[in-house]
Image (cartoon, rainbow, N blue to C red; front, side):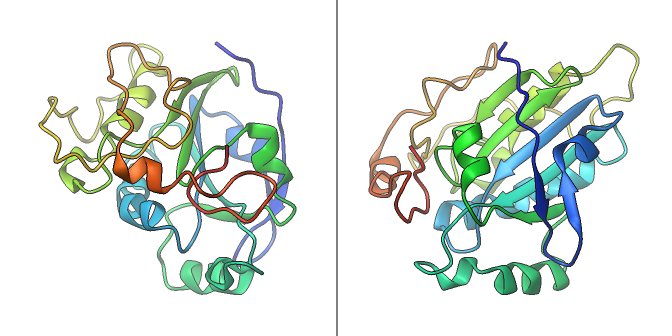
Length: 213
């Protein structure tokens, strides 16, 4: 597995600063999600990600979400807009602002949302999408949940939500540029399709929403 040593300290919507070291401190696993306010894929997966944060909060998992988008190009991604969402109770974890976009570059975040799971040593156990279909809420972020279960030492309580069996997809898939790099033994990778292709128009170094490649 690839060792991560990419700490950050970023301002949090709602006040204060949060570092990766704080989020990881004493945790069996840590989830870092690059997301934003306006991307349709980020919005489609949003509640599934918040539910994972809630379900695993008492199971030794740190969780943080980061918005690296350019608010000049996308006013809905401004820090003020982030703060309004946090104050409205829309986030189950800290929501941080990567104003310079440097953290996203350091982590090579490709899309929104781009999920990273770190094990207790800080190694990347998984990176990719929450599950294989942004349009199917019943999938319940199953890839992310499976990755977290693989990080557990023996003897921890069982998962609050059982893993779901593979289900037929309606074809609404999104993997942006990270499909080849997503690593989770036994889990399929989403195939590229119209939804993913539609996301490939915004590249790193310019304003971008769903694709950060």
